[in-house]
Amino acid sequence: MLTAADAGDATALLAAVPAGRRVALVDPRFVGHAHALRLGLTDPRFPAAAVPGALTAQAEARPALVRALQRTTAAVGAAIPPAVPEAGAETAAEPTTGQATGQTADPAPEDPTLPGRIAAALEAEGTPVHRPALGSLVAAVPTDAEQEAAAVAGLTSVDDEAVRLRSAVKAHDGFFTTFCISPYSRYIARWCARRGLTPNQVTTASLVTALIAAGAAATGTRGGYIAAGLLLLVSFVLDCTDGQLARYSLQYSTMGAWLDATFDRAKEYAFYAGLAIGAVRGGDDVWTLALGAMVLQSCRHVVDFSFNEANHDAVANTSPTAALSNKLDSVGWTVWARRMIVLPIGERWAMIAVLTALTTPRIVFYALLVGCSLAACYTTAGRLLRSLTRKARRTDRAAQALADLADSGPLAQAVAAVAPGLRGAFTVPAAALLGALVMVGSALFLPYGSWLTVAAAGVYVLLSGLAVARPLKGALDWLVPPVFRAAEYVTILVLAARSDVPHAVPAAFGLVSAVAYHHYDTVYRIRGGTGAPPGWLVRTIGGHEGRTALVAVLAAVLTHASGFTTALTALAVAVALVVLVESIRFWVSSSAPAVHDEGELA
Image 1 (spheres, rainbow, N blue to C red):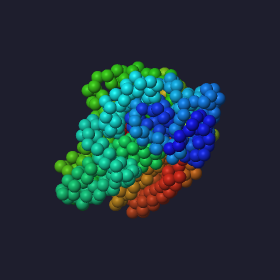
Image 2 (image 1 turned 45 degrees about the vertical axis):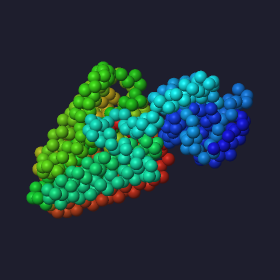
Image 3 (image 1 turned 90 degrees about the vertical axis):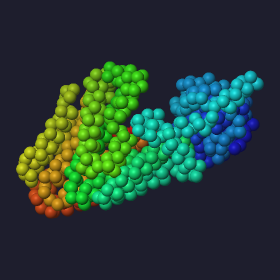
Image 4 (image 1 turned 180 degrees about the horizontal axis):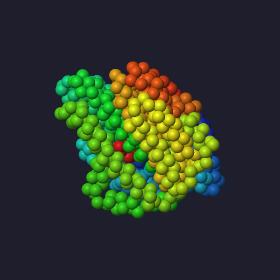
């Protein structure tokens, strides 16, 4: 920490700090809780942030900070001597005294201190400054003895650590997570923080525990199932802990969010596979049910992703249905009831764990299929009502996100390049749905291995291209990606199940897993603000329509032959290798901004 004599000295000290480092300006009279400074000065998600009397800037906001400081110096002359910690905001976040009286950040706060004036200058220039809501935490710069006494009184009346622990828990979580996990997992998070463990390490521990649980389930014994259920619950406790550790220690990162989301899917689907293997050892083949559960869950997620991407930045985004939902939020019990109806990850994993320990894999999958189907109907119906009653204009960014989520390959793109765009309010989702029905219907009802199924795949390619020939800005165009996901995944499931070829369904399970990983990876790239995977990757793995058509051709060429299993396995391995190598390369080297998810994914 370096102390500047005046604003001019502060400018010189800032210039001496290496360009890639975070810097902070803190008024030496600052009185407040340590966690108030942590929230304002150490959160990696924001280029610039401030609390009363303190301001921080990361590398990308450093030039703007210097310009704002120079302008402020010129305007007010010699200012209040600030403190500039050369090592970064972390050192500034350890004051020996504090202040704050439940002060929260206003959009345009009246902070007369030098950091406050510089923050206002940054915003005037167009650099956003994040001001965290402090709640009961104190953060202020008293100018007389009376103000200082009030600040100190507020400081001593609020338990800084208790607030920090409460803040570690998600603002919006499911009933099971909120009342059965978070009351103690937050203390595990603090234990991890005090021992220097990172959220990513806890995420990895959760994955390893879930994989061991899957292995226990694969034994097919009652003891194995009981151990699997217990380990799955332990894995979920760790899964909650990693996010709470990130919030407690403010260790947010795009890679952390990606690891958390993709590992959640890997854990759940690996457990499905373990249950299926265990059931086969007990004489009951439930691979088709396992794959069906995975397909249903993946399609549920893409409905959530597509709807949110289509609407989160829409203009004039109002809806009577949304207004009714907001009104219901004021009635406490309806909030929990609606969160439980959608069967979020906490409730779902608790159900899986208990049923695994007490019943059979077949019953587990029946319960999953029924529960997730009801949840999917509820959430999709609500989104349809909101979309039909919402007066909104979708942005170009939203249309591009939907196009990326559609995952159209070279065949559909070729059709889209020459075909006229469909006109009409609902023609785009109707075309996508018609193509999906033709594809899935042919796989279900035509003789297995029929070349008519290949012809149906050609119709699916044509309609898929027509659906994406124009920007996806219609009220229901967000349905296009989930319809494509359902068409591809269900076609693979049906053709593998009808093939009567040994191990074809497990091979299809592997193929859908690899493709689903690609789709989740796409979602988290978009959420991180870096856009979709590169075009060459989508072309290489064929796009949704190319993979669907290829599986249809393989089923026709290798009718009832063991080569069909080999072909599905080879395709799964090829897709997994290409997608994983590119995904790992991207996330390890990504400069995407840190992200943080405050909602519980279904």
